[in-house]
Image 1 (spheres, rainbow, N blue to C red):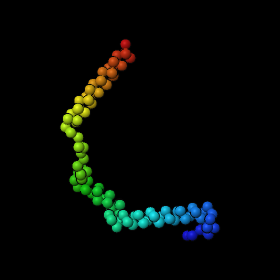
Image 2 (spheres, one colour):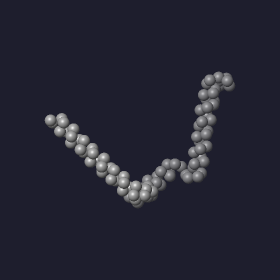
Image 3 (cartoon, rainbow, N blue to C red):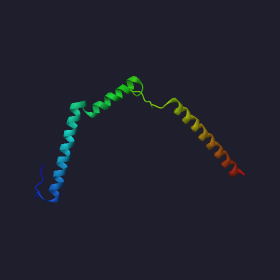
Image 4 (cartoon, rainbow, N blue to C red):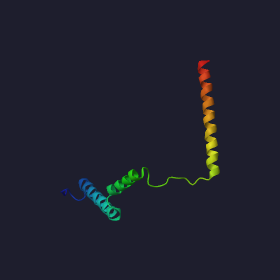
Length: 96
């Protein structure tokens, strides 16, 4: 389990960093488990709720004023009409 390399060697530093990294990871997982339970448990709870409610268990929305949404809809319609005009003129050029 432990490396017999001299303390100042590159091998010793690699071993030390790997062990302390694993210890930090284990400590973080232990803290998370104490707060929420294992992350797999949390994900399973979410997925069960999705199945039970036939969708995401919270509302998705943007706080956009009605005028802004209407302006955006008009702009997108204009862009689509411009795109279709451009496409039809390109098709005429290719045929012509």
